[in-house]
Length: 383
Length: 123
Image (cartoon, rainbow over all chains, first blue to last red; front, top):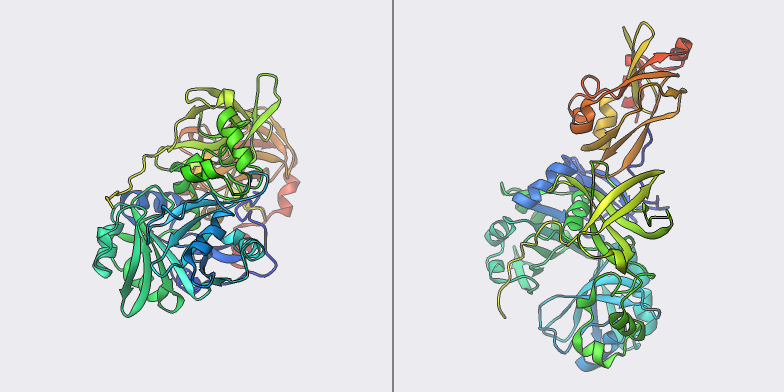
């Protein structure tokens, strides 16, 4: 039997995250990911996936880059303007404490990374970027931001995500007040004398929280959370299947420097003022694509039969020519069928369209469906 | 009847010149939740080491190699609708295919149960 399980490229030297031993003690199967050893699963991807949808799952996402931008001589407008020159975010409209999703743009309109950023009360900006991109991102920011802007990489902070319908019940017991947050709202909290930064956000489509915590306190916090009956530790495998069902693209797979925000169906990340004013890399191409349509578009597929069609499979037309590609795919535990994300020509992008896929010499049929595959269950609140 | 194992974690149980092939308990544990199995068609000739079946977990696709040469006489039809049998009973009801062995001497290069257990213990 071939062993394709650890298909992430083996890094020369893998680093360990603050919860490394914690995962091993709980039976986490460690695999290389983004330069670290990380748990792909504990009891099994299917069970962990379904547990998260029904209860609450605790994810260690400390591989992600937590950055704080400050400076420009205390000139908040200076920091905001400098960041707006690199991404289509509207920092004037962003509310203090509330994370916003944005895209680090390449000159050609491609995407260098997708990220979350939050304005803090002191005028600084907290940002979470993808683990696999963080060093390149820091280099890009350093190269393009004025020297007076400080970039502080929070290496001594860990990041947890608590996701699922019972996440709020569990976290509120430890950190009273979090239940008052709505989806995409955040604030500073404290637990046992440690500072926390918590936002009601995540990468599963469920209600839940992302918790930034000092590395020295993360094991105790993870222990306290998993001591509750509602909470189990969940690995990267289920994180991937959950985000796929929730229509959340994964950088390096569904997004890269060749995909534009319009093709990726992330037009919502291009804020209205920025569309009108421009002033970020790729603006011209994005405006043309908004008007005339992109060549291809990211869509969701339900694949007929039981065999998963995965990243790397191609979309073919009636003549058998390659016209698109699958960028993520797998078995959807919640739905019990294989699903995928693919880039297809606009003429094939309408829900209900039947398309043909080829994988390892075999033909599969799929139908374009509206995403998310599983409805989001975010808890929204005013303000 | 005797059971033999490969270093790629297939097993073959031999009864006369008929072999039944599957993957080991260790292999199913490594793969995790199995969601799809493709077994070879009756009449297909396979050589030892050939890709003979496909097994897919939530996470990845893997090829299953034939531990011996021969002609396939039956694929396990139950796996089409219940691939999880491979997780539940990998060395029993979760078998993949049966074949008539064309060269039983190939079995000599495989491990017996004790040797395989020792091999897995070192992984």
